[in-house]
Image (cartoon, rainbow, N blue to C red; front, side):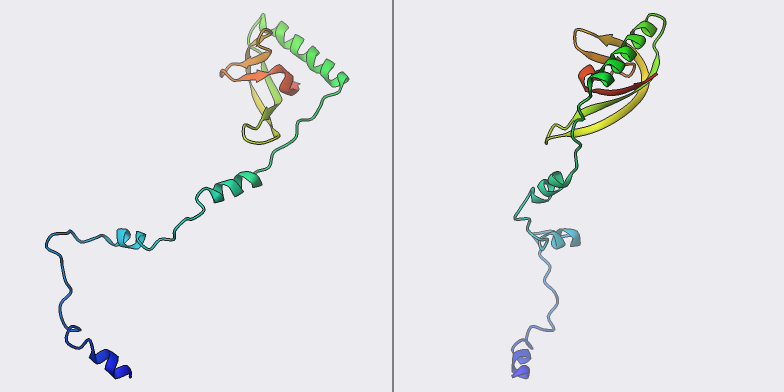
Length: 138
């Protein structure tokens, strides 16, 4: 049975490989791409990674800590009359895609305190909402 299968192709087995005169030869990477796996669930991998990404919950500050932060902000405001003080601020940055967020710590010079916009404006242009501030180090 095996010999009969091979014998069916004996007339063409020794012929040269066909090269098209009208179409260019396909590069090997393009040929391989034809056989790449089909992504039936496009976006599924990104959704799984987003779900697995961890966020932190916002910690509520008690009244005593809130008063200490207000006092530190007053001190920074007084220092602003002389120059741009160097401080380190830890604040909560809400996540745009899911519940929670992350606590971020930045150091730099304070440009101004915007009481109307309720934000601390740093020298690099970063605006930190005063309500989100967790700690200030002078």
